[in-house]
Amino acid sequence: PLRYFQRPDAKYVTLDPTRTALSGFGGTLIGGKVGSGHLQYIAGVTIRSPGLELNDMGYLRNADSIMQFIWANYRIWKPVSIFRQFSFNFNQWRGWNFGGEGTMAGGNIQFNGQFKNYWTLSTGINHNARSLSDSALRGGPALIYPGAWGIHVRVGTDSRKKIRLSANWSNNVREEMDSHRNSYNFGLSFNPSNAIAVMVQPVLSLNENDMQYVAKIDFGQDNRYVFARINQKTFALTFRLNLSLSPDLSIQLYGQPFVSAGSYSNFKHITEPRAAAYIDRYHGYSGTEITLDELNGLYNIDENQDGVMDYNFSNPDFNFIQFRSNLVLRWEYKPGSSLFLVWSQGRTGYLPNNDFAFMDNMQDLFQVHPHNVFLIKFSYGFNL
Image 1 (cartoon, rainbow, N blue to C red):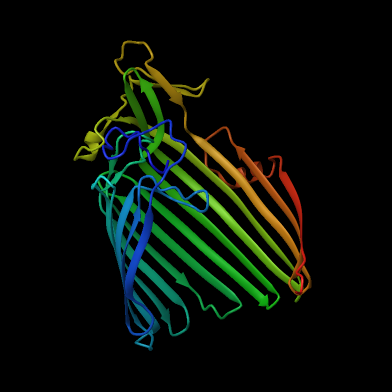
Image 2 (image 1 turned 30 degrees about the vertical axis):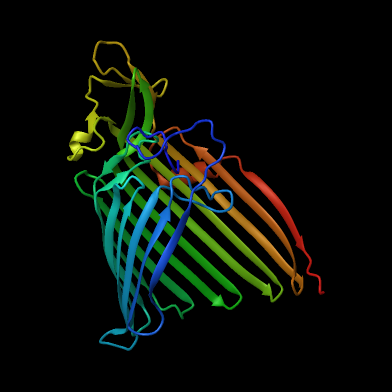
């Protein structure tokens, strides 16, 4: 998935199925001014050749990329009006593949400020221009995605207090197609003493995407790249507890229940992935072309409408539930030497419907059979 060499429109690379290794190059060059002064700035370029492979020793998100970027920040650290300090920053980026095609471009403007009562405010707006994705069709030709606008706002209370609150909202809207995402993130941190720290963070995400990948189907001499509109709701609650019983003995607890449900509609397959207008890039299945076989969980497609099924694909609707937790006891019995006792529990399940009902899903989640892991880690530091 890092480099689809088999793409029919990628004339600058070739697929060799007999190869057992890849070779490539990459690097980043950055220059600028940081540190003192009101104005800071950085400009740079990052290159990842199509054959670059780093995953044996690290993590490579994607190859076949040349990206240029600029960052500039202007800060005021003396009180002005209602602010104790604040800053504005600007980002700009642009990308190409090794075939010389522009793949992305965008920029944003952000504001970060601290009020005189030590509350904080961060906000920004960003725009991504129309992009060219070489991975959207999973080895098929590159697909043009419409541009998008995004905005975010975050407010936080005084970080010096024992109780701290934060709230974050972000919104992303796609141009041309009716797609948008809203995310609501809240945080509560409580430090009743230096020995206890509690953090609770609920997150709710509402996503409607008109171009969600579903399946690749072989159809005669052609391929059908099937997409659909997804309506997805996701909720996660992260909980952390740090308890220091003594300078040498501590307990950490982490837990996160997670539920996500998605329903699909408006199925379509890609016809002209580089068409200028969004509506010309796909063919939407009409009511007579697509039928749902609920018993077997399949969508049957009859493109020529002759009464004979041409191909089918599984109903992609889902309702996913998961719980992850860790309980760690750490005892530093001598400087540089520690004993860890760990209990990790996981629960993962799928519900037979696509209805997002948080309380009902939570009850179903804790009825899933758990997977428990118990670990002991012992380390001893030698004084040489």
